[in-house]
Length: 268
Image 1 (cartoon, rainbow, N blue to C red):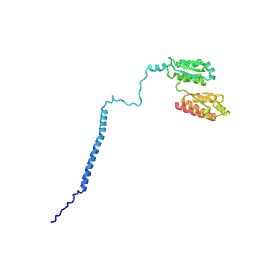
Image 2: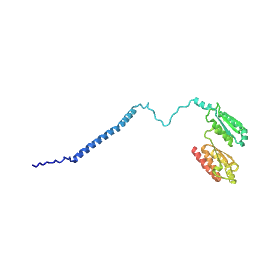
Image 3: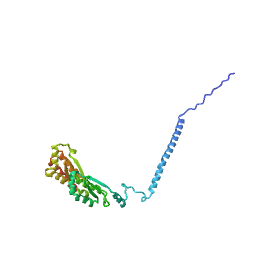
Image 4: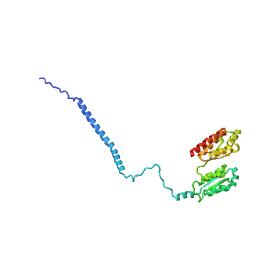
């Protein structure tokens, strides 16, 4: 007797397109849910910010601080100003040897403005060849010591006393000094001719530059000192530099005329 055993084939699940579509749909749903939760988490601080904005909008505008472009500081009390001037400060201005005799003659005209206008204490130290200035209880202006030093320095450079007093009365006056070799290196007769072109016949060129630019000029050998406002010093310095470089005086006069006319138009 023959027994036949039938071997059943293993059941294999066929993967159809529908099953793939279902799995794909489930994966997409899972990713959408994950993205939704991320968006909710990300939107939470925005909602808080909106709530903060609503709270700020509800604040009374009078109580809120007002933005300002420049900070405002309260005025200093008088006690603080007096404390700065109570400290004694000194300044020594050296005097060249060739200006010792003139300063002795004009000493009354020098120390009188310093003591009366600025309230400073002044003395002449002949041994050290310098003028010593210091503040006192009568000094009211904080910059009085600097003004007094500039006044004495201007006289030491060769300016007249009446011209130097303008430094005490006006705030926009300055001193500028330079040498001829700073502009161009000259030697011998070339240097002498350059100095002669700046001075002119009997000082005519120098006086013309002073009147046109409203400055005061001192020629001390190869050094040139100019006193005036910032813009006027520039005009006088440009004219002197052109003379040093060899420009004829007539050309410099023409340039000064045009500059003077422009200054008058700006003043109007």
